[in-house]
Image (cartoon, rainbow, N blue to C red; front, side):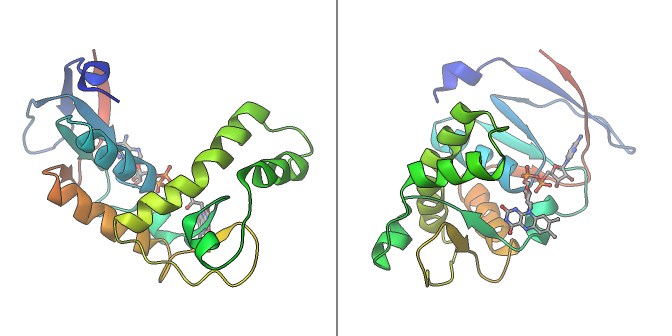
Length: 173
Ligand SMILES: Cc1cc2nc3c(=O)[nH]c(=O)nc-3n(C[C@H](O)[C@H](O)[C@H](O)COP(=O)(O)OP(=O)(O)OC[C@H]3O[C@@H](n4cnc5c(N)ncnc54)[C@H](O)[C@@H]3O)c2cc1C
């Protein structure tokens, strides 16, 4: 992802009761859950200036409440434990479980990226329980909060500001 892809200047109208402020950045991420913080870190790693806005007084969303079990095929941690769960098999399970109702292209994309995502999170310091059996589950320690804390730290290291109590209300492009 290049800066040029995200260079449209977004003027964010912040819904602060006390005061409004304008920021000009390459990327505004709405929501400081697992997806948003990951996007923020990835965008910053690709040279973008980024802010994250979060409507709640804390970051994490449902991700921090979750069990933190990430389904993934082909993750390095499985391989290290001596198991190989191919992404293609993971994609087949998604299709079978959904009785064919999932978008197959999307399911195969998710499956093929899943192991890389676990590897990427591990590289940021997310701790996983030992993989004890063949399969797709990679459980974070202690739970989903173990995903959020390293992502917040990674944002900080990259100069990404996470603005709490800040609800996105309108996008002007
Ligand atoms: C109890 C529980 C257990 C779960 N266990 C698992 C599991 O083991 N494995 C698994 O894969 N999934 C699990 N899930 C599901 C998983 O947690 C979610 O699918 C995932 O966390 C969604 O991530 P997200 O970043 O998209 O959303 P969230 O983590 O919910 O983040 C969205 C964020 O956006 C913020 N937001 C929303 N609107 C605005 C706005 N207008 N302005 C600013 N901020 C805004 C929210 O406040 C929130 O912080 C579980 C869910 C729950 C509730």
